[in-house]
Every structure is written in C-alpha cells, then in structure tokens.
Length: 139
Length: 447
Image (cartoon, rainbow over all chains, first blue to last red; front, side, top):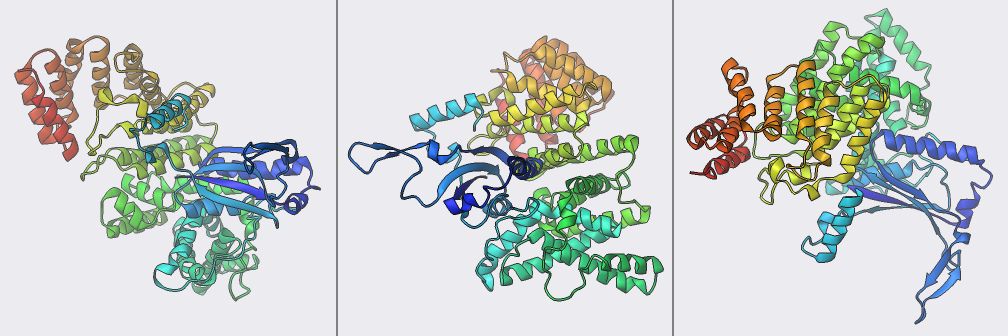
C-alpha cells in the first residue's frame, strides 16, 4: 500500500530549526532516508523550495488572482512529502513519527495513495493515464 | 536540535481504549513497530545474550507485553526502545534464575545489570536508544541473525520458518497462513529449529569472509524458496500468494543493504523484482493462470522492472561475473524488455540457459533451455532436448516435462501424441488452476 507523508509546518515550527547547520540537516535527513531505503519502503520524496519564492493562484474571485507566496491566511505551509510502500497505515504512521527536524509547529499528514487499479478501467482517460504510467514506470 | 536516531515528533499517546475491538489501534501500532524493528530487537538481544533462541523468546515476551500494555496505556514515545528494555529485563530475569546453577550466567546477569535496566516500574523506553542508534552495529547484528536463521544445520523448512519469524517479524499464524499449514506445525518447526541451533552450538556472530560467502549462498536460497512459494502455490486453489513474494523481496532489499559487495545478493533482488513485475499479468479475471505468451505486457509493473534492471546492473558492476541468480535475472530481463514473445531475444535466452546449465547443471534448466530453443530454432531441436530428459528419467513426475513435450508435439502436428502428453501432465500437476489450463490447451489442439 502506498502512503504519502505530507509535511506541514508553521513559521514557528520552521524557525525552531533555523540555527541548525546545513550539514547537520543533511545528516539528519540523510540518516532517515537511508533507514527508509534499507527497510525497502521508500518510493519517492521531494522537498519544496521556500514558500516565499512561490506564488498562489486564488480562485475566490471569478477570475483567479495570482499573489506572491506565502499563502497569507494559511497557518501551516506545505514543505515536502514522502511516498512509502508499507504494509499498513500504522506502519506509515510509525515512519512519520521518526521524521527528523520536526518539533512543535510541525505536522505530518498521513494519507493513502490509491492505485490506478482502483479506478474504472473502461474509462478512456484512465486508460490513457495507465498508458502514461506504464511508459514512465509509475504504476 | 532534533534527535536523529529516534522519533523526533513526540506526539501524545493514543487515546486510551479498552477491551474488544477498541484495542485494535493499539494492536496494529504494535504490529507496525514490530515489522520495522523486530530483526534489530532480536539481533540486539542475541548480542546481549549470545543466544538467538533465547533472544527470540525474549523478543516474543516483550511483544506479548506490548500487546497488553500499549492498547491500555498508549503507544510509548520510543516504541522500539520500550520493546528492547522489556526484552533486556526479561533476559536478566532468565539469567538470574539460571545464575544459581551456573557462574557464567551469573556473570552475564551482572553485566546486563550495568545497563541500568533494573530500576523497576514501567520501562521508560529511552535507555536503550544507544543500542539501536549505531547503524554499523545493528547491521552486524541483523546480518548475524540472518546467517544463523539460515544456518546449514537446519532443514530448509526450518530455515524458511525461522527467517520469516526472526528477520521478517512474521507471527507463527502469518507464516502458517502463507504456507497453508496449521499454526502448530510452524510453531513446532521453530521450536525444533531453535533446539537444533542450541545443540549444534551455533555462535551468534558474522563468520569470516570466506565462510560468510558460503553461508550467504544458503541465505539467498532461503529467500528464493520464500519467493517461489509466494509466486507458485504448490497446493491449494490460489495460483498466487503475493504477500510471501513481497516479503522475500523486502528481505532481499534488506540483505543487499547488509552485504552491498556481494553480486549474487543484488542479482537475487533483480530476479525477484523482474519476476514479480509480471505478477499483475499472470492471472486472468477469474484467477486463472495466463501464460507468458498470452500476457498483456502493458500490465507488467514497469517500476519493478526498472528496479530489477538497476539491481542487475549493480551486480554486474561489481565485476565478478554472473552467478546462478545473475544468469536467471538476465533471462528475466530479456523477457521484461521484449515487446512480445516473437520479439524476444531467444538466442540470448538460449545462451544464458546454456551458461546456467554449465554453472548449476539441472534438468529444470535443461527444460527451460528446451523452451527457449523451440522459440529460437524451432520445435524439432527442442524436442531432442526434451526426449533426452525423458530418456534419462531425470524429471519423472514433474508435470512441466509432459506439458512442454505436448506443446512441442502439437506444434509439429503430432496431435495424438500431444494429447496423450497433456493427459499425463494433468495427472501429475498438483495445482487445480494449472490443470484447467492444461485441459484447455489439449482441447485446443488441431484435430
């Protein structure tokens, strides 16, 4: 079963690790990632660049409005994700609990990722998506 | 700063639930931790006690205690530390009991006391983090554990059961279900295996390099048996039991991490990934088997193929040539990259089977080579190999021999002989699904 660990953090949560050196951070994340690889569960992972460098497309008005990031009202910012292949939701949670560089202000959301097999296979768009997944090795 | 070797998120314990189904979340949390940590916990306890059988008992006691305590009190902040602490405390209890009889045990008990685990009260669950925190030491422990579980003094089925139990973290129930045998049978196998190890005085240690390599070959064979059991049910109605195959692949991944300089470990992982990649296409809508030639190759798992090919490339990059698993993985790769049966590089498959036959002579390899020859050179050349096998009586009783022979005779237009061979194959075949397939092929023969 595929699960996504979605990492979210408030300003306070992020500030707590501001004084941690880049090497220390690489070391902590590297060890954790290595654990995931050795356990044979890591499928994918990405971390995102600073939210202040991004923009937000807001659909509150009739014409979507593009504003500079961060998101304004949002208290927690999405910082990155892991996709794991595990036996149960509990196992995904157990890995989530081990995430380094996390403390008060940090939350990790654990969500199942449905597979393409769970969608109607006779739908033309699903067939197209399956073909794309097959050609790129992302089944 | 965040701790790097433990759970940095100190989330509050789960809400306390009591009784019946409400214990379920706690029990599942125990299982999740167990799946991730059991090999390390048993490994660490085996290093403390020098005794794998005892370590496994202690780990099981700790697990049983967690199953009672976690659903009641919540999941501890450091679950693996908790389990290890309880295991160590049980070890001390056991040694104290024996200390009266044996000075050696008394010394061990004193040594363990110094670890500071006898403070009484509920385990704090943090004092053993140091033991789990050193990756090199843990790797050595887990490797030693794998090698002991697959020790040559044990029978193959004992090795399989013990490996799934102490390395894979599966319960006797789970192992029993996977192998379609009663739980008591699995328990008896594990008990007997532990007794055999104790009687043989097998030490808990990673042996020197040369012996290590030899013993590793045994480990690879055990993982392969587990995988095969998952990919072809030898009995029962289920053609596929993917959980065991998945488990074997996971264990192979772990093993590759422990011995990254062993080409055959990478090659076994490659073989398992490339074979498992075809699982999705191996059964039809009603669970009936679909042969390689008829499989919808779009259903093959491209990610698994990519991982398998990468593993084979890593094996090759070590530059020590291909062993038996490397050659089989290379055959699987030929199929994996071919758009169809017709476009498969059959000449290369024949060469690979010839090499495999020289390295590890076996009538099954010859039979596989015959199938490849039939595709590369035609049925006549293949039939000569098969008839040789029949004449030397080396595969009598194996249903695939008459099954392949029937196929070849059919292609040569010798329909009556082909039908008789299919009948023989049906009589010998242990799997009902596969028998149906053979009957259908017989019925489809040109009159």
